[in-house]
Image (cartoon, rainbow over all chains, first blue to last red):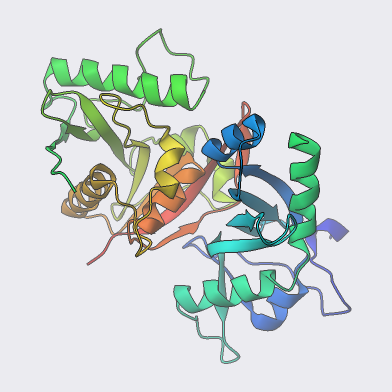
Length: 143
Length: 199
């Protein structure tokens, strides 16, 4: 098996994600916290691109970001974000729940509800350093 | 909020009038080619493809002036469909399903060109305080899509579209999850998602 078919992180047991016929990749919380996601792309929403480019007195911009595992099948997570320039240019926060093909399971291997699953995924994402990636991206693209 | 007149037509190509089919092809060209920039290789002003067959089901929303303000296309997965034939990689390795209970939703848009031009992705942020999209057109089209697919025996939809469409569907209150990661196709990000049809 090729190494990039594994998801390796922080000394946890490697695993290969399994795709269900309903399109979900079911993970336990322990597996979720092992995930290594890679930045796929990010962008501003169209109306914010116009504002940024025209350098108007902008207080808030919104955009989206996409992250993916290097495994096959791939795990996909995307979410909207916003940054409030009144607070600080690097203070990016998640705007709403993420979008994903992950469905989390509990320790008894029962599916969580989609709502519960997305809430936990969102909390986990906020422990990662995604803000810096987006900040750098926006800086390089629009400065 | 002012009332918004809308008439929604549902039917196959053989049931819709020629006038509606031509208007729909013009409208789709404006949305998908001119606004979203998809390179579909279609004639100027007309957007139709091999999946616009006599048995294809359409949902078409029109305003009082009979201008199209939204549309959607439904295909059974028991016959050739877009994801299966053109974008199977969006299914993340899953064999394209063939089931009476799964229909494909594509060419979904809700843009009113009449009064103020609206970018299709602009609908994403047209939220109200409760987080639901305020576009009456979008909500009505999606509701009609669900009802139409359900009448055909569908329990789930496979949506293939621009990435913003999953935001629109979720904000309309439907359960949606990704079939896989978005892919870049000719410079445009597209995605496939599963949508549960409510009971």
